[in-house]
Length: 167
Image (cartoon, rainbow, N blue to C red; front, top):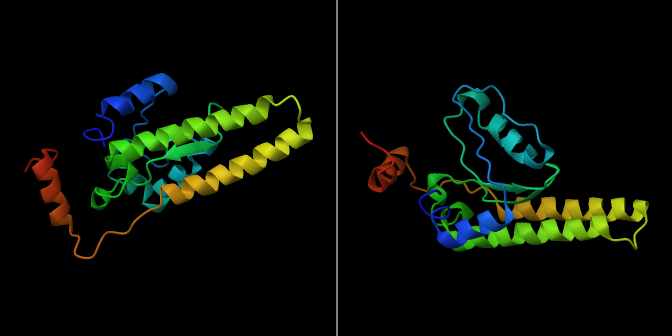
């Protein structure tokens, strides 16, 4: 991801303009996902399903709301076998995900500041909107199983070719 989408100057410009980047490190052996933000609940659950402290690594980018409650967009999983499909490895798809996240943030802000809404209507609209966003984000970053014929040795060879794995 760093060598493709995050290395793209257009993506970098979008991040610099609209986001506060934060890297969450998860040292090997960490019992549970290091943050308990509602907007990253899916990643907390994924970390546990993958084995928690046995996980060798997890790679993804997410955009969450300023109050940490809603995920506006993410790359989905970024397994090596998804290199040709994942948002994480395609600068154009990554940029589109960022643009969509900004639109969702702006839409939520409009609802929050709409003076024509009663407090009850505002809360109802926010709940409905946030539910729609959760469903959309889940469908955009859907997990893909490895293709038939995929092997760990094949994955290692891809990492060797990219220079990310030394024997």
